[in-house]
Length: 611
Image 1: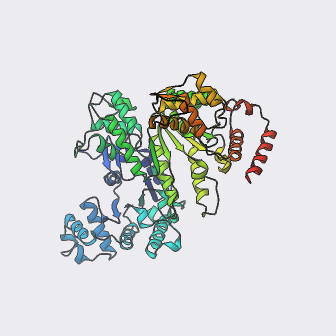
Image 2 (image 1 turned 90 degrees about the horizontal axis):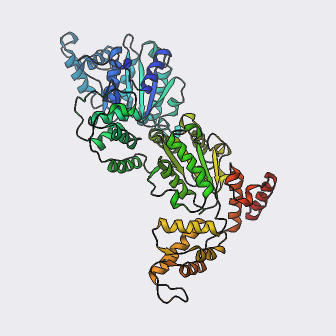
Image 3 (image 1 turned 60 degrees about the vertical axis):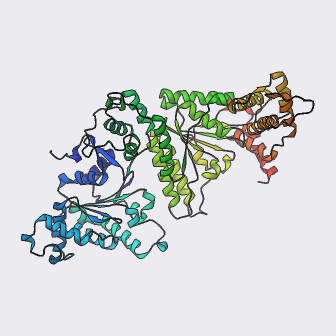
């Protein structure tokens, strides 16, 4: 079989095409591949392991390919490469003739040269020696070399110079020197550094303009579709398209483990051609989509080491009481998402208002209504130097791979906060990277950020601008007994509680509960239900009913003491008004407020709470 010409393959991955073009068109001789670098690669209509893909890619160029992995040592693709390396290293006295060709070069076949060199260096994992070996190959004239350093972040890790040992510092210095070498470029050689995240690799390397940093993304829709069609040739288009969506965000290796852990042959079949996901599937095959989705949730949460939580909401807008203008606005966006009207979908949505007003609950309901996958961004900050940035990059890579996703950030003022230098500039760098990602126009309609906060004044001002958060929705406690009744009935539906509460008995109880937030009303309903189940009868009730009735709710309303700081809540409400992007979403008492009056009220509220 003729080896495939991968550099000219019609389905060469975009990231490898960018590397190829920059190498051919510029003086760049060193590249960092980061991200999904330990996955399989689809090219020439078949999957490859990453090392085998790189070996095959460089084969047409005639380069000597050498690999180094600090856990495995130095190795070559085959005996031909090993023999070329042995001759080159013998020429510079890095190895002796006695070690690799004791009978003389003319009398030692390539297989023996390669075997002797392998025996001499196979267990050499020390970066100092391995990099010296590679450098001897790189500097030789008339010997084009492709040096591939796996786990480069372990060879030259990032960190303050004072925290790195001498070996780490010298490894980074050597890699930096290679990137500046004109001899390396003129010799048609290049160095590939492989790392999980760019932030883990020495910034002496990553911030060097002579180094090309290229992200290897998670497989896109078409890659996953072609891979699934290869694993399960009988898939029909509808089921194949469903599985393509379900497996978003997973590596090809993980998809294989989930879908067909033992079915991929040593010589896999050619992946079907096609320009769209539906085009590559042909027939029916039963697959456990639900269990795959559940396992995917576990994989992603484990892969991100607790940095995200995959959300599978079980409620929609019918479980949300009141807030009709807000639900209408979000339902319109959900309809745009489902219809593919990307230009009408905001880049981000900021939910602002006091605690307990239903922001998080409504965000999850929106995820259900829109059909978007949803993740909750958890605390990615770390005490170790560089770890926070590395964690954020890992999360953003997963989000990019998932696509068609809602990213929920609870308590944004605490998890993101404002920029500052008290932490060595970490917050500034994190916020800058988040703002860059959130404002990427290619994400519109595909990745939506939804942030909740009750203190928007603590958020970076530039983060809140249109283009990042196009829609800012204010939340308030229910404004009248009708809205409170709608919330009570929604709570009953959500918890599947039986009640006999007609409006004529419910509304008078709720009339005096001004200022109660949705969370307070839910707690009140649950207290009434507990009294019912526990036999705590209200005064005048002798025979316990089987469902919640007005006397139980009235007793709970009398006994319940909401935790309230009225001055702080009033301040948070004014902040919500100040941030709102649409007057129609404000309650009537704030709808026509003038900016000057609002600012005066905010100043007074700040003074009342001591700010």
